[in-house]
Length: 388
Image 1 (tube, rainbow, N blue to C red):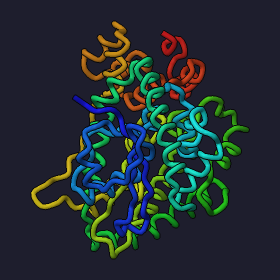
Image 2: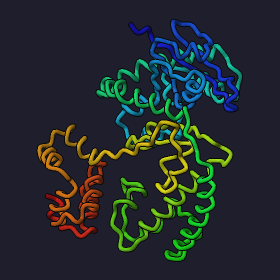
Image 3: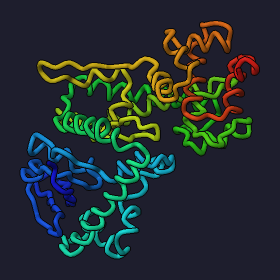
Image 4: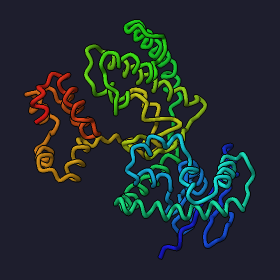
């Protein structure tokens, strides 16, 4: 039988000298605990910013606690509010605590958490109780939105596995890293120079605001969609989007390569289980998913291991079909290559599979019908066929 919940509060030692501080609040008692006590705890542990401390716990104990619920991750996952995911990098636990503690107490706690103030046990006791009450509310909301079972059976176990894997580190081939570092600078500045000359823009990577200022006067609509979406899915009369996406890809790879010192034989990325508003799992510090395929040879599997790159074919369509129960979608998915069938229906030929896939994913991720039909028309489809 699982014991009552316990709140974990911690103060991270950013020098990685092993001086992290851990505190439990439970049964109206505040106690300082060691990492070994932490990982042996049988009760459900609730906390915030678990991603920040989990790698340190694993590095020290070679395991993670049995059951940990990150309240902010659970709240964002189960709320169903798109804005919550968009704002997650800009807010901290303070906002969620407002209903359970005084604002001055919350501010004092954040100062302790960020190492701006020394530990104050009275503040920790108050915030511990507030976090306990917040956990009750957050769990009720998750259950009310039918998200609790998915969180406990899928999201949380997957997060634990990924955190453990990343905390063990990934070996780096420094010889290949050195070569790629040298080559990427040339590739980046050549691509930047060519892009600047071709589109008569400053010799710098365009910001999202720069892109909007260029494209809006040409009739491109950014209402309800972001820049990345327009570049990837909206047809254009020239190669501006294609060239810019290529430049961005090189810039991202350059950023990752430059973030890894040649002296570092092993990297320890941070796992972000909600790296985008569509819940893509990202690695940060460094952002390994931004490495181009031809640069990934700097990553070396440990002895006796191999890297596996898995692509779940048409998984968005399969999930939509299963959850919606839509007979037409189930039929299309069961018949084989759904995107070829969509291409045949819209473009009267399977050769436009790539465009059909873009249109389908646009629909899947919520593109408005008007924008969807305009995009299909831009690819050369018949408006009437698209509506049907």
